[in-house]
Length: 538
Image 1: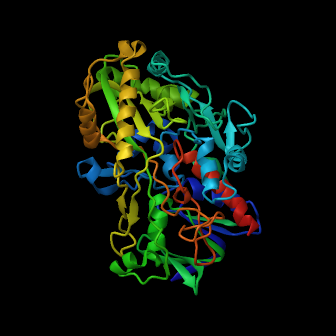
Image 2: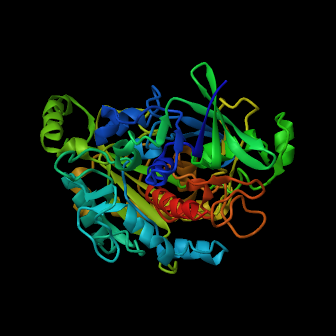
């Protein structure tokens, strides 16, 4: 079996792994190997923002693991869909590019729960270090980092009408969701190139951090290779076994093995390697090395419900003769100027609102989308429409990631346990009602035609419950399955070291002890920026 030796071996080239590989290899005396199951993540479908509509559905699987959940009792026993990026850049290569950090209280809550060094004031410098914001630098934004962040280049008029409708419904406008208090409505900023050379292209974590440094002599990036096991010498992690095509290879680590395979992949690889709930491992034919019951527990995700209408307005994404005739012009505009319809994140309008005036901070998030999304764009409809998504920001339901068997190439068993806590259903109903009031406000009336999916005026709580259980699913923010904490029951300590073995860390969204109040890509990049410092300090 072929084998090579490096100082650091990183599993997963997504939002966290791309950052780590770039930052750790800045030291020319340090050697780094990055292992990624997918490809380079630099094709047209990734670079063109609107290309997400080709990748997200997973039919065919383009840069996408396209996982499914176990049947969800809270969702009429439906299997949910879990798209995750499978290429350099990970989910930042297929997502809607939305740049959201969450709320100050999220991180202060982590610190109060025992994660010293992870409060808002501790992590803000790492958000700033990562960011190159087109608005320039200030106390809350950076302008010299690798990750390009910008206002949308060509938001649709209907998205501005959504903002007016929200204000008509009594919700305040905000120009910046990333100052620690994200309450209000506005347009999302996006992770998109704003320099002259690549204006309008997606700025994935790989495009920002990794692609520019791929030729460093001390950095080796292995793509289309899946890690199958962590190797140990005694209790010290010493390397990774991987499969590339039909070939098995072994990559050894002098200093550390770092898992950045995401909220599903990192706990799966730990369990395949004997670290996890001992009884579960034995049931799957794996000899426990370290009994760590919290591995794969504490899964949290944002459950999303969509309110959609058809529209006679064709200045949106849809399927019509007029839309087809306009597409060549949209393509030319993007290629020549980096502007126009193809730069859209689809989810253009944002809202962070309270389900009740008595709630101390926003507990709902809205994504206003310039098209109709049905089953993650896997069901298409003729014509044009618009929709608004709403999710509960801090759900109480907790799920698990478990092994589906000992085969390292098999998908994990993902059970988000959506709506297992009844408080989440009550808040989702409140959010759906609030969303409907905004969508029926006067500013949007010229754009709305017929409600879709059985939506109608005057729905009771029981009607909303049936609607939610029949239609809701993830908005793609799974976290928490390798929980960080100071307690012995946590998977990693505040330095992100796995409890029990030596030389092993987890650096990705799985370490979040609690789901942040928003989209998870920017926080994941922040975690990796901070982790690079922690690792360099030893």
